[in-house]
Image 1 (cartoon, rainbow, N blue to C red):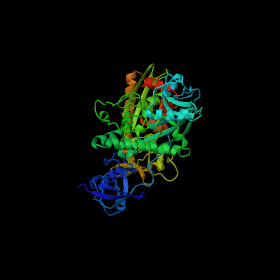
Image 2 (tube, one colour; image 1 turned 180 degrees about the horizontal axis):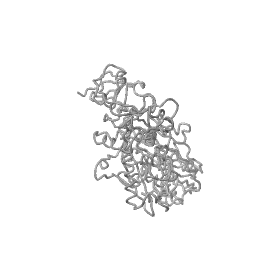
Image 3 (spheres, rainbow, N blue to C red; image 1 turned 90 degrees about the vertical axis):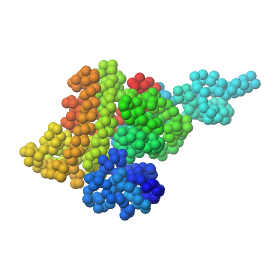
Image 4 (cartoon, helix red, strand yellow; image 1 turned 180 degrees about the vertical axis):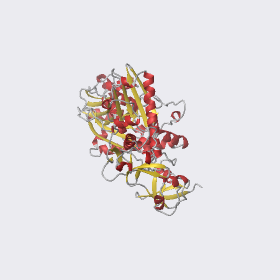
Length: 578
């Protein structure tokens, strides 16, 4: 049965008509609502919890019986991906927006001076027409700017109106010898650009003054595609299973970026009219999905992209709320799973500068690894899975308010929690710290198994020992009231760790070097910024390595995008790197 029914989402008080074969999650996605769904609606993560406020609800699905507690079921909590819609159903979704600040996406060192800017201003004084000089307006312009390219119709219309009004004295903004805008007189108009890091999980946007090189503002938000799955495989599957999938995910990505642009320009709306250039980086899947290009080639062997070279178009073509003159650049991709974000990160980290062997690791749902040695650079991508973003973890969550982000164990467990208020769950860095501490304290074996309670070390502090208790599926370790770590959680981290370490080992073997040859290991990205080198080494994600030689470099992909936005030499370096 596929009839149409009405379903209401609170607290938005949004009533939408949907089909009876929809799940609540699909209905929320159709309505453009953000419902956390790390597994993409497969019933595996248990994160898409909603509360049914009406009595119109079907029987519990088997996955709900496994993932929800009896207390939650009694309260009307259901999994949105498992619950079918019913006529008149009222659903309460989380009142906390699934968004994030710039935590871990901060970049520095971008206040450049003396750089060769990519958007150039040219002031010209044209000879007015006369009986002896009846040349066209365009010919008159090319006398002063012989390298300029013929513009489109809209620009020609503007030129014809403006140059006479301005007494044939005008200023052009040029990009790649193409006219972007024209202003009357010797205008000191501002020129801005946007550097966009379109991550699988987090989207970061940096508003840059293209004349001074200063970052004027920045912002970040959860990628609105996330309700269709935390990893790219889930989203690629969605595009293959639904005819409108590519268009849906394209709109979600554009909406995320546009929302950040609106925030950045809220204090000074005139900035948005003077955005001339947007530089965007991201992994190949994100670039295809952002452009609405069917990523079928990425979904299976032999894994091919639709495009890989530098792509230049207008921002409007891609659905961005920017002026019609704004140009959008997608930096080049390397392969099906090594993308423009890796190119930008390698640029920012100076991996193309001759030096001793060094490793760059951007760990997340998709982990990218770059190894520079001699005059060569190797790169690979690994499917680390969603555990490092809180996916597949009993009390896992993304790095937001209430997330346990750090754990130490001395006499008892000490927690670092993001923001005010009590702990609500465990994000990736907290998960990594917890497992590292459990290993150091002797609560788990080297294979990751919880030890028998009567087999724990005799010198283990009693307060820590009491936290390990029996459970119907084995043993659990209590971190905070109502929050504990299961054996399955540890296994999920092992899978992520194994994928990343495998990538590191393969690059090292291909290069024919030992880990002792490495000068440094650089951790990039939002997740890398919050990791403790000691924990990475303890769990074996990184090889045995001096802690002082492991350093975090922030959002290297974002910094690389800013450098390419500002500087032609850096832009050329990026093209050569790819």
